[in-house]
Length: 366
Image (cartoon, rainbow, N blue to C red; front, top):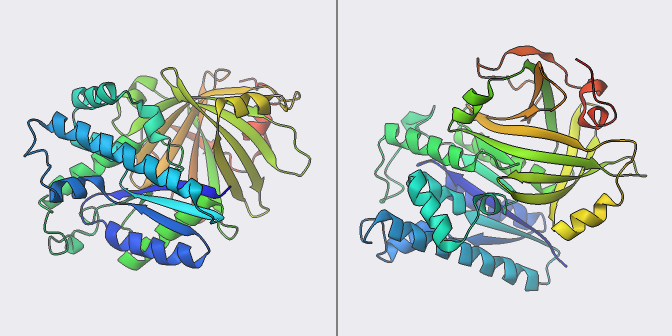
């Protein structure tokens, strides 16, 4: 059976998405991947005369767009499963949660209810999400209407839409924001590098940095539009090959998804981490291989985007005065920028006592 991965490439207006998709096609085809593209659904509908301004209401349009989006992705997945290729990459030109940025909360809830969909299932059905930041953020001189006749947003509107799109995807376990801190070509090179990392390409790594912070104001976190709460139960498995193996139950509001994860730490502080989604039955079977020397680790995670960084704020039930913040970085010299509301205690990157595997061995005393 083929190794299939499904990713989303999204972004604000004039972000470079069209060029980025072309680069993805060329790069990963040369690396031996069969690359399939799910076309942008909104463009298809609007070009065919179906748009929010031609339908009875925006809700009528959004229901139709979501129905088509989900159907198309299902068709591509089934087609990929029938192909003889060893490695298949399904690239979605925008995904289901992009639609959320164009609706209010009541409309989005109505779409889910009408189509009997679940937000967690929709969001986490993708293996990774890559958001290209609009040129209106930090590269406004490059913001143009020339390459898209349908673009109508002013730079200020583009920034607001960009923020809504990031907020819609916040909570996904592998959301990466590709910003405009460099010129355009290096920006797209970072996109390719981030995709390579998500696919487990052997030459790509991530640097994970961890910081202890004072116990955060949970009410403040929950009030942020770019912050999403999930509940995690992590169980470590026995391993004889030096890998850190674990299974994870992850979700919210009674909807949970399951993952098997492997992680190998490199001497230079970089990590190679692979994750695959598994069924609830596979999850239960893998629990039979639980490492009995380590307890299940439960935590509440707040996934937050701040600037161009994705933060994971972990609150453990056995800590009352502190919490942990994790950041995934591409280089050791990338600056760390935390919200001022998160009160830094100190960095604990590389300290064995603060690794999740160690926290599972023994509940620390404060």
